[in-house]
Length: 347
Image (tube, rainbow, N blue to C red; front, side):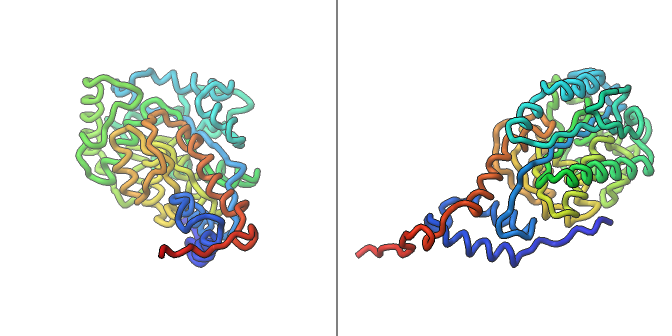
């Protein structure tokens, strides 16, 4: 198990006291103040920083896509990886906006994506169709998590101060929904959404596939590797590993949407302390996202009705996180500004 340190609550208390000396009414910056305190607890720094951010995208295919559970064919995974390389995807645009160090990892695309900007870390060409057999072996699940950890370490060595972890993989909302169903046992109708824009018939098919797969495999909800190996995806496992590595280094993890948050649920099962270093950036319109957020006990900062994935929502929310750090790093205290901190009492 990764050695993930606890939050530094004493540092949080010090930063809270300091924030109360800044030139503003106490508590007037609301959740920004809470964010600054949380970041101080994570980083053990009274003046936390989150720049530069690191964006790491894991790409892989899913055998279950053969069951007609997505609006797009699995070839789109490979095509979208090339779109990432060319800089044309939403996450590219938002990564440029925030000055992120960007990495794209082929951890299980079905086919070669041979390009110097694509990290070649393939476990194999996509998972098996988990409607009939387990998605991957337990050893492959562990290998994918380890790759995620190694790729996370690589960006940490480049100096990133927070993580935005994204994904690409046709069929991965089905895998994520199956994982969340196995973990929480909430009704499938509350978990399964429309993903990439599937029809009502496809949604019903997705629910049926998930129900049959869970009945077949009976994954152990208390064993993250059992969950991943039976109904997971290589990119989801990679995300889990990157989260564990970030938390080990006390680096904030900005959670994106549904698939990312389900990966966070699996990471919590492997090591509950990982949740200390997570910040939920937004709430997706995908049905199960709220259930996943409840499992990791996080409240989202925003609700922009997003459902893209790729890490895009976290990248859009990143400037809010920066604002929280700038508040403690750059605002003047009452004494520095020569401003009276005493409130005049109403007579």
